[in-house]
Length: 133
Image (cartoon, rainbow, N blue to C red; front, side):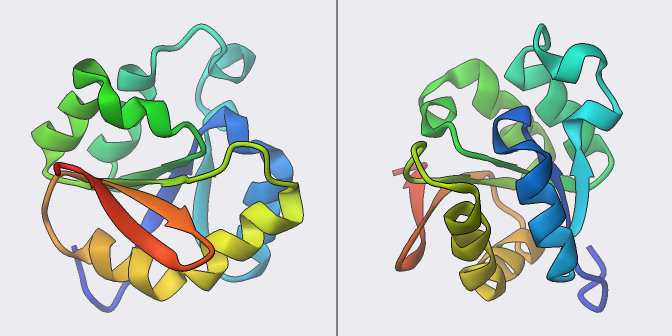
């Protein structure tokens, strides 16, 4: 990855269009799953959409931390030697989701630029690696 170019991210449908818009307003390079998969990827496995984005150099953003515990969903991360980032709380309001991602932007960008398959939880205190242990 070119260190002068900001990383690009692929948002899972669970984050919705308002989170995407909020991050784009703050200068993030965001691609929405709805723009590439029919029916907002309702019938698309996580492994499929994640691989699609990672093939293009887009890092997955979502709010489902359970993905980190599923080998099939981690497989694209290993294959592309890339991290993914998820909110540590699935019950947040849109404004708080945007705030947490944006507050951790420097940490997220730094990890996106470093090779290594990993899952990172995004919380009020920044990011922490949750896989591999």
